[in-house]
Length: 461
Image (cartoon, rainbow, N blue to C red; front, side, top):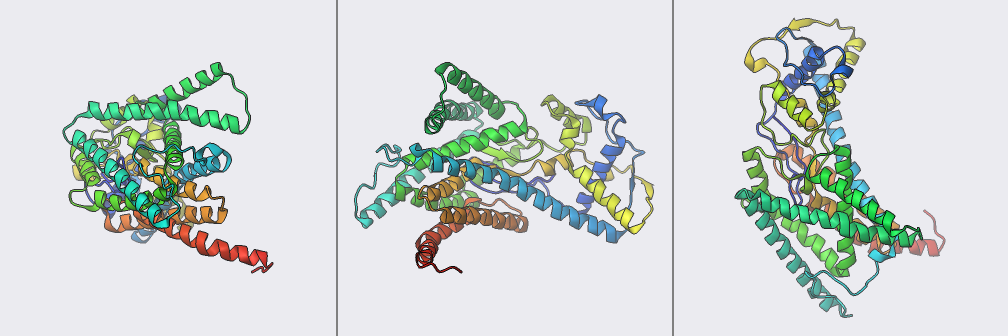
């Protein structure tokens, strides 16, 4: 089984969760499994939604391509597969940052200094001395990092000793506050900003339905798209809270130290996030959905062991409320389309050969779902990406905001590239945050003044 998990843990990392290293024969085996499932499926799919499909028949046949065309198929599948997952990752990150930037630009509440700060930032940077602000920002960042480290270690210890009730209660209370209290604050200030009237009865009904549906989707069952929307929103909401209640210089210091913490937590032999991912792999368990954003096809089966019994896998998806057609995903259709296109272009006749009945050559159902459901990104990554872009946008410089946005996406691309090279757990923050900070200071201190000077002198390039 091979699946790619981007940051499948509470903080911030990109990881490829692999029980065994896939090679080319296994990829061909997966494609053959796709075709077998399509060929052995009932003729009238509309009458079998949610049913349990039968296992692959021994009489299953498939088309065979020459080696040259087989290589073309594999290369095109690799390109489409990689591009597909990059888009699946970029879209939610972009949406989260867009929500934060739009809110910062329109709602003054999140940029107004009310003199209220987080309890973890006791130094409020009220002095005019630069040196004082620097050490206060460093002290605040160190205190906040210590809190994050302690909470992460406690979470890992609870997971290691299987105290699931403690973790679920912790996450449940956190989600409850975000979906009800902080969402209520957000909605009231948006309504005030745009001068939209709403009575308290309607507001109560809206918040009740919004919060209850969110709790069900995040902590129990629900459509994947709806769960993704809720996770994006609560990540944006958390980023807005940090921007609102953290001192100015402390925000930039926190972004720097949290990237260094991410490197240690994921790459160090005793890093807490590395221990969490390895423990989840050993137990073949899914990491809590409220801590990660899942961009895959099916999130209820992440972490399940590979089983040769097709009915077991299909029944698990059906019991979770998902049909077989939805579980299969789009990869079988793409594979069939590529094969058909190549054969039409070359005029190659379709050769039907009977599959071997050797158990090692039998298709393993569920491979296709494992690959398409693999992309995951920790919610911590969403939060800190959005903090960086939102803080840049709070100064009103759109050039700097766009530069930070592009820098974060470049960092994600590099992270994905190194993930494909090293095929091991990697942190998702360092590249993106480092590029974002560099682009921010270069753009705000050099490029923007230079452009303003050119505009003042009416010099156009």
